[in-house]
Length: 96
Image 1 (cartoon, helix red, strand yellow):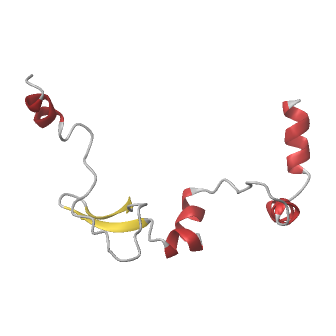
Image 2: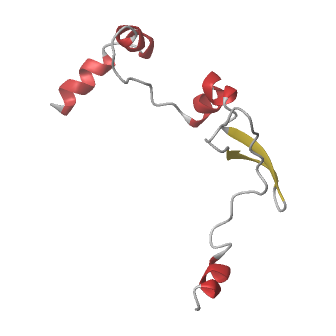
């Protein structure tokens, strides 16, 4: 069944599939590559990818806050933590 489904999907282009589902009440969306995602108009409009200055590596891209309120602006105060960056701090708070 998996092979049959794959063959059916490969029978049309992504554009063809999107046109087919365009007028149907169904939740259908393509799986995008990271590059396609970054260039997607909705991602750009909602500012979902931000340029953040990291103190060690310079400017990096980071996922923006998904909560958008009409009368306030969300400001990213710091870069995402590195692996284990806060481990000691958290363990100390927990008494370890």
